[in-house]
Length: 298
Image (cartoon, rainbow, N blue to C red):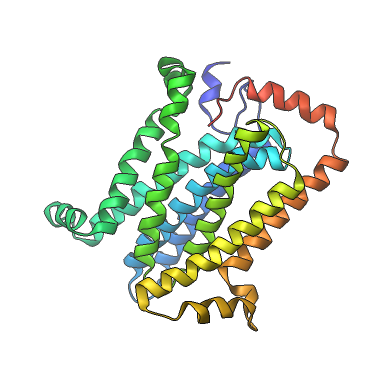
């Protein structure tokens, strides 16, 4: 039975997990799409550069998704969601490594040039630091390393993922240059997730947050996203911040990062509220207790 656990689509009992299988296959889809598009020459005039951007983009997306799994399993009262956290986190590392590998290919395997670029360009430096830190977490993500380090030490080490996520976001912002719409959305959702963790100090890490608290945090995250966008364009391009803020109430307000963050936060919060009212409470509690006993928190 122990030997069968090496397959990522099996649960701890050695049985097929549909959730893990679906997620496992989905994690390969962005890479497959990029490879297929490269072969069809549909990645634009600089296909290798676009492939570098796509792999880096998905590395950050998967990193943020892995951070979202712990709070989402509580908000949505879906305990089994925790079973795919490790898988998504390792995928983030895989895409980040591929991101760097493609960059090396783009530089014609001139490792001296690559090293100098990483040292001289700030956004490449912090991106490389984030990758090195992420590699440590990937290497210690196995059950054997958890036992070797001990639960408490393992949790302390893996809390560095918050630092890694911050570095990745800074790298993303600087690399995006003029169009920072998606980085703003990601930053706003990251702020919401971190604020939810801060609520754990008041309600307890495993306790449910009231609907009004999560909705209020969503509104605050949306406001911070809108003001952050205005501040960024002011500092980076000298734009009038009031004009940027005014765009949030214009005819295309629904495309602004602040409103997107608010919509996502309220959608998740509402889904959790509906599930708490209509899903079987006893069965969820038993499942949560059983899974929590085998998966360390972070």
